[in-house]
Length: 307
Image (cartoon, rainbow, N blue to C red; front, side, top):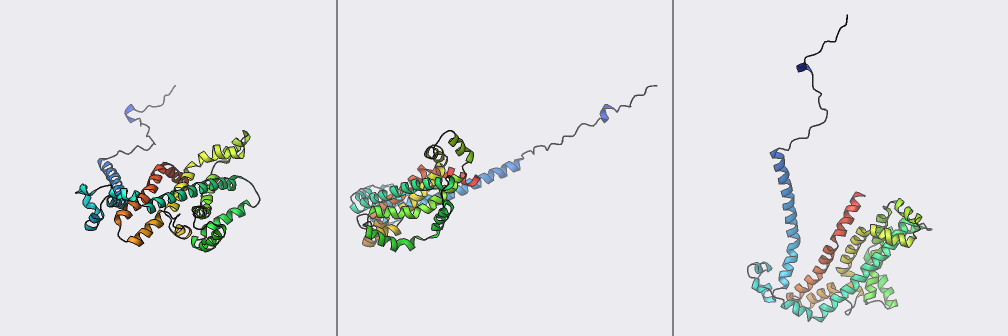
């Protein structure tokens, strides 16, 4: 006698329950809150941008107005009376030998001081990160210790040394001072960045017959370009806007734009027709440099945050 197992009706057969989590449906409320959140963030960034750019716009408009207009009303009146704007102040600025000489002195100080710091720091950073030599760690600790030495401590001893060497009051003396005090931070920054390069990349390059110089120029420099660009921006801004070092180590023929503008204020007090375009010229150059290298700067910041 054969028996068959009773079968359950088709209606009673349970369907398998999916164990996966269903994707939540985005409701109109969630979409609205997300849109409002993005809009608030964007509005906040716009406000921050306007606050940041307002002094720059005010300085630009003041530099394009006459001294009488600046004394009688604010720069915002040019928004309704654009006839006040002219380039007469910049024409007069080009005729001011003190301002033009100081501008070129600033260029001759900032560019070499930035280039020397970047080149020397890149070489030293690679050596401290990947080359073996006696006393490497102790020397690097000494470099790190120099970061806490304030500039004011070295002003008088270095001034005496430069006087004996004939460098006091010259552009090379100002450049050397900026290079000396910019190197500890620069070496520390690039050494830490180069140390994060995978060892396998360097070993593969050495197995292919690459020497240290070839590895440095063909591998390390391209990989470390964001950090190098960030260092170049910071160093250039520090040197370009410096006043303390230049006030002490530069004489009348070698003083940069910051010192010249300060002397113009002391001598003439309210000569806004010269000071405004000179200040805008001193401000716009670092802004242009920053925006020219901002892509590399952002890459360097992001790389440092995810490594």
